[in-house]
Length: 141
Length: 141
Length: 141
Length: 141
Figure 1 (cartoon, helix red, strand yellow):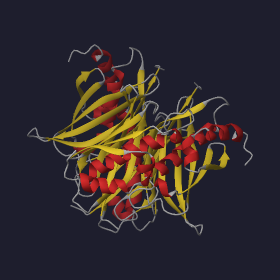
Figure 2: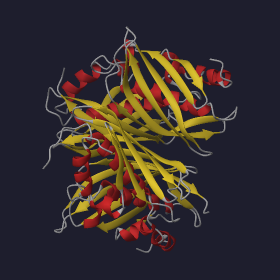
Figure 3: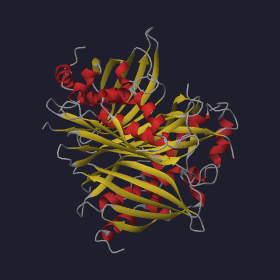
Figure 4: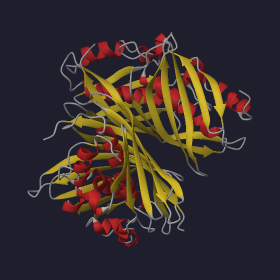
């Protein structure tokens, strides 16, 4: 990964304590795209031992946010205005891979999608969620 | 809180390791309604130190799910099929209070809403998110 | 109805040819709220003769938009950025009543909800849809 | 178009009076996919003369529904449970083309997406909306 935005995006990512708590890391970056990978942690489960929908959401939302940020000028940031998730299958396996993608980067609103896959220990992947939402570019505080 | 469903809902809630990790607890329960309260933990932040949207989502989604479960027969469970969140303000303060509510309990689909407030140390509350989604009743595995 | 924004909102509404085609009219207006009523027309049906989801959506979305517009300064307009609808029951009966409401009016984004009821010929009402979305204030072209 | 489901899907489509009113027709059909094309009619506009969001929604939703129906056994039907739309640009031009696609066909829920393009008189196309939602298979009444 040698994308020009990698340094600033990694710096922003490192300040997100929830990403650290989830053991998440950025595993791919492209113009308008970002992939985040995280292990399925036992302390982040729902009532059946699968990963909680909040984890799937957090990874998909964050991947979508950094996908948007690759298209922003340095120094700008994005906030999630709204996000919708459809859950397709339980978050079961060894790790989750979330890929965010920019559908349209407007001046005021950036429309994004994301998909999240669960990967089993043997490397098999299954699509478990799709997301669609809106990021808002903001000036840093 | 002496709602008849409290025992079974508390038992289900106790198996959600993410709720435990978030320090969340059920603070009110009614027919078609559930309130969950959780502290804003430093290890669950986004890039500006506010709570991550994934936490706000997790609490709102879980409150909505248990709101739905109050209307299910004992032994049944619900899964989130889809959920949409609009974020209104940063998750800043001492704790978050999520209230879920059933809009319509159908046989196959339960439509729910939730709202999440952030409460400052002085007790002031601010609405930070609204959610709308669908729970699906399922038979236990 | 004597709300101060009624004149300008009625003028805007009158330019929406789809509202005219649907036979829709504004039946209530308040700060942050708008109600639109329309007959269920035979030429706007789905495959079972109920009203098409597109009609329910159009009325809910428009009611939400004008709810937002009541809070804007004269001369400004709003556009729907995104909208989510959960359909609860078929759009059957004599007419539909959509009520939009502002949840939060920000400078850049206005978060709205709406609900749509179907009213039978005998006056009985049934909630058939709930919507949640985002309006964006814009300067007129 | 010689898809095996074309006859039954065309028959269902023909009963949707709103599709007829919009001048819409099915222009492509595949397993898990459906395209619907409709002219931008002057009587279906919003306040600036572009097509109303309700029309864009109706076409995207219907394309998604028939995409789902291609995967159902003959005699079954689908209903929209919920649908979310992000509007990217005004519905301006000569006609709209909506393409629905099945993301996951479950036994109880079918998750779908759709995109809608506006085509100018010179054939230029522009993506104006993306949708994500849920269809529910139902037995005919």
